[in-house]
Image (cartoon, rainbow, N blue to C red; front, side, top):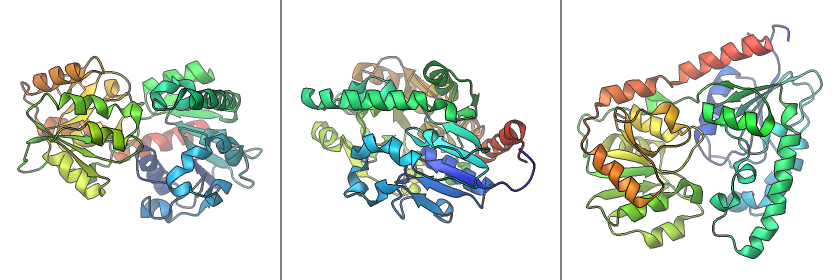
Length: 367
């Protein structure tokens, strides 16, 4: 592509809150200040001003009823909705995809780059991990829908010219499911949002997470039934009622809170607990940026970002007993806040933005 000022389209699955994918989107908005954002739906006020200052075009999903709370129920319509966008006139299409965004149809002559958060997990992984509470009857209905989504996901993989994976863990999934190579560029952590507390309370453990079944918050709640310690949980989600019902008195639910409150709690906690398998895991790095260690299940992206015994402790089985052993081991280790923050700085925003600019210049020819 010739050097110049290309028209850039940024495609995101949906804009309903600020998570790791939206932090990547913020960086792209800075790198491409004139870009237009395309997304299945947008809940105004749910994402940052940086994102909402850009033109945002939504699909027909936006106009369907009950999308604010139940948009995931329209999953069977997502492929059709993403393919309905007209990107005529755009030269560069950048998708940030964990569901269908990468399947958008680029216009003739345009270059499509996908920052792949993961191939669609609900289709490629075991359904029981993502829909554990579904009745046998519902699962009979869900399985063929997810198979169709998986077939569509594989069939549309070659619409993307260049893949960026957010971890080696995801790069391996891209090879297995799409038969495509990718370059690993780790997502950004906004170091400026976090700081080491001059004096920490250090009397509670912390979880910051969506309440989805695969996050395995139940492991931590069961563990704290046997521990003389406090656990605070920040977040919300579909599994909330079940988790609250099983929680002992020493587990406190704080609900969804502001970025500032998250940062305060990360700086003051004894350690962050991370019990699921994530493709990268941004919250553990936010804990390190706050000078706090992480106790994590030793699979997935955390193996690329944490160092056992130095920045955290891994547990080997997704069981309360294994987590308890890791917590007890962590209490015997001296973690140094400056060392932890330095480990997180390798993923700071300027590092991501520099690497992405270099990728676009080398692969696409835009400088």
